[in-house]
Amino acid sequence: MLSPQRSLLIALICLAQSSWCLQQKINYREKEKQVLDQILGPSSYDARIRPSGINGTGPAIVRDNLFVRSIATISDIKMEYSVQLTFREQWLDERLKFNDFNGKIKYLTLTESNRVWMPDLFFSNEKEGHFHNIIMPNVYIRIFPYGSVLYSIRVSLTLSCPMNLKLYPLDRQICSLRMASYGWTTDDLVFLWKEGDPVQ
Image 1 (cartoon, rainbow, N blue to C red):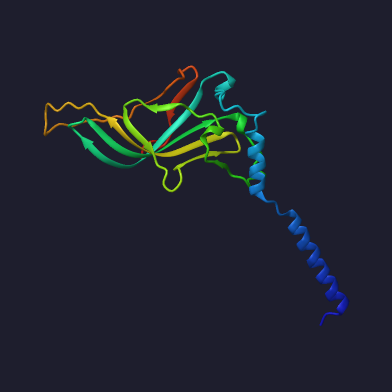
Image 2: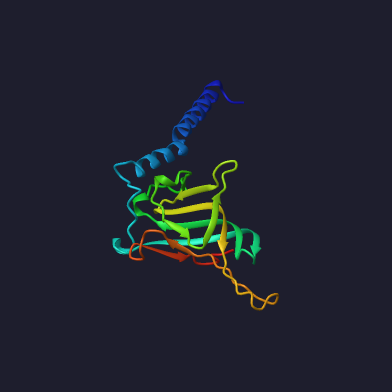
């Protein structure tokens, strides 16, 4: 049986350790807010300026990949097809590097695309398209500690597909999905497929 002094000493040690442990706990959600305020503040980041490429002078390189969620229709009369995609782009913006607190913050998530520079990609054979907003907009941006940015969005598109029906009904058609920059030249912006299964 422990003496009262010994019991009191053990209780004090346990209390001291638990208060020390409580002081060591950090609210990483609050840290995420501080990091976002720091890297996206008006004095440190301008979303109108594209990130610099290799050696600070080359074009920004954007790697794309997509997941075909469904193909809704293929119309030989209208020469078009409809598809639903999860479309992703990834690029490096060194202005967005941040301290990850020894791996405690794996990435930061944004839902407002106007906060960071975005590639101006468009689908050049698109006839019609829309974003998905139920229940919330189906879009996110993740910023990783080394400055990599991942943009992901779900879209539905109707795309033109010129068809040669000379051999109908034994014809075979190839429908493309064409993407390009709307305003930048290849001196400023280059799109590449992501390595390893870019289309799924």
